[in-house]
Length: 475
Ligand SMILES: [Zn+2]
Image (cartoon, rainbow, N blue to C red):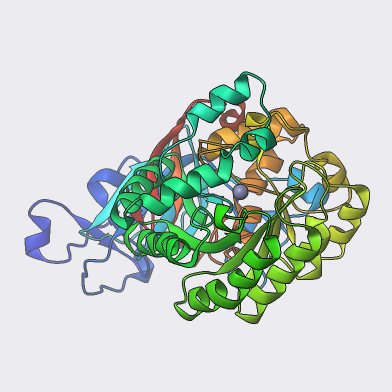
């Protein structure tokens, strides 16, 4: 092996090795047995972009190269956008692998025994991941993470026997959260939401959708959406924003759902769209909330403003939300506990991502969505947290994947697809997130030493995430 110093100044403390692509700190890399391709030297100017090499990875999970379904390692047109049916049980991985991150993106990766060559760089960080797994960050495609207060008192009422609907009829539930949110200053909302953002970030989430829907009037919905925009601008997470004005009928429109929807369509939607504050438009399609017809009306109005639909569908009863969502080309329909066989048929002929929210299902003790039937029918499936104060006060995607196995009899491979690439699809992020591919965002996490990827959903309730990297930076 030959040592080539970049400059005398740099060699005072470290020696550097350069090839055509990567720059490594040789002092840290000496104990890896894969070395510089000296025939391809081209000394470049040193710049200060952050680079990270993770080497000796026990298992690199959800790689594009090994799948056989895409066009290779890249994140371009041919790579997988979602994983459907029986394919969900095959998880592409590389054992004993390395991955290089550069300028916030995945630069390359592969098995250690075919490491292509090394260059070196002053601001390179090398991480040894022996015995550990590296996952692409979780994508959480359904949350209500911006809210005021909490609802543990209602939780106590529910434990004493009241149903979610009974609590709502008594003025609790969403309307309770709305009353509190309207009184809460924007800064306070942002500060409390950022605490939750930091919590889920350290649990491995790298992209998240956040809904409005606790404002229920123009001013308060705008306040929520501006908080979401500020989170997007100030946190390292990739954030998508959803307008959920049709979450409940506010008290001032009690008994006048039509009047509220006219207000929502005539005043709220245009104002929100003109400020560019939302990516999607969502409706809680449910008995005592919004019917299938009302859902269609709101979704169609949202589409006119360029907001693609998402739907809260078939959670507490069968209400036609899946059919309404598919009719309007929704990007996802979420919950699905009461989905029927004909709903599965609607979904089979659509580009809509069925999404389950196991935390809310468990918290409300609801029946399981027909997940095995959906997968057997060839459908893809996403998992999200539904992080919200009323029915899932957790945004821990590791826990959600564990619950996916326990509640729906999904396999570890299936839940990992559901929490990465498929939930990225449900936010229109499959091209840039959700799997390990060259050019995708360098959003990933390194676990503690674990025997393999199945250990993660198996160890429900534990946080095995040791190092989080978002946009190529260690958090
Ligand atoms: Zn929800």
